[in-house]
Length: 410
Image 1 (tube, rainbow, N blue to C red):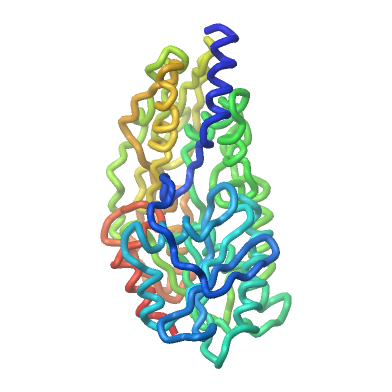
Image 2: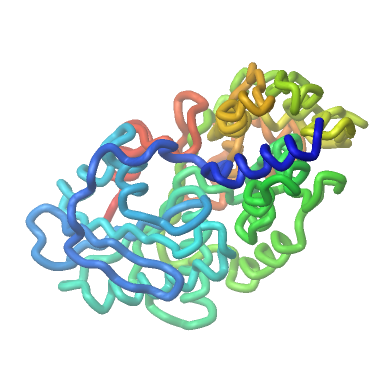
């Protein structure tokens, strides 16, 4: 393919919205959230405050931290995800007299440790503004659960502050690590010369800290990134978990050990347009020298990406992300430039259930597919947890999981 066509593809990719692997609404919000009762400017973030029913001031704060994405948090995105896309969690909170404090970040792909500064400031602000002595509830969705976990633990261990938080919650948070298929990471880096934004997201500080296995470039061997090691060391330095609040969590995956039905080693995305024919992105399979991707975009080269000793993690029980589907949908907007693809498998496991309930690591099939329902409850680092009745979208707000949390609020 000519250099002119390569330039046309690069210009088209860069002019289009970025490819972003993250949960939540993909289309612009169709419903407008209510006007907040208050807005707090925080270091590295913002909090939008909505008083509970019957409250004329901040009375019973529930601080809820945003998760991993790219760019700044917005109240429109949060309301669309937490209220308008399934179970109306925010309305239910406010009906119970709880004040919703939506904690957002200036950059959602920034370091978890940096975004914890916004969480710490929000906790201090809530205590200063609250009328009465009702304890705080603090937690978050996906990465937000790790941000607030670290923030509370640091306030206790290093700052010796009474954060007055009675309940900590996490919603499908990757306490033992998250997963983006090596095939998708490799493709992101392979097209960097055409458009760097997908690669930038995969190499962002938050991605490096969250992902159990990471590659910085398409030719790299999967490994635990140094930033993840540093984050885990920082967690350990503050005691790993806060000690004062009761710790609860939910998972968007099942506890039976039943996988999501995705078969290992199968083609999930296949190039069919002239510029991308030969590309073959596959689901992760265990074993030595497993082919996970063949990459061809514009040029004649078609390198293969292989892995060794990784488990069948794409099909594991847990919260799912349409990672292959997000990429396919983006590429199929450029069919006129020869970038069309087939997409037989849209989703993969993103946060394994054993990670979300902090009960096992995710490095082996035995751990990933463990029957959590049969394990002793005290095997988890959480005081109490529950799992979904089916493997579903990561951070999907359901009545099943939402009411379980609501029933445990102080």
